Image 1 (tube, rainbow, N blue to C red):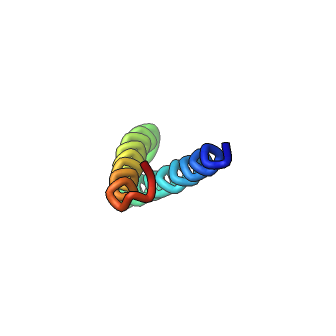
Image 2 (cartoon, helix red, strand yellow):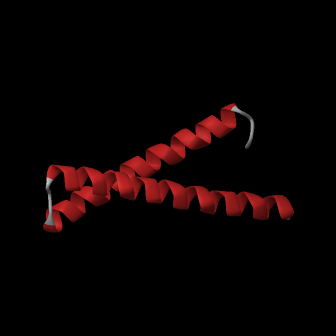
Amino acid sequence: MRRERGAMIGSIVGILLCGVAGGFAAWMLVATLGIDGVTGALVAAVIGMVVATALWTGGSALLRALRWIQ
């Protein structure tokens, strides 16, 4: 039970970190391109989700390759 709780907490922390990084990257790109309004929000949402998913996938693959997680 303790191992499952630790895995769940690790997953939650990883999701939060990837989401924050994705949101920040999206915000920076949209701000740099000067896109605002509804269009900027939609573009930022898509970019943020893509970046967060890529970070989550890459991080999971790296941790599995290092055998830190199964």
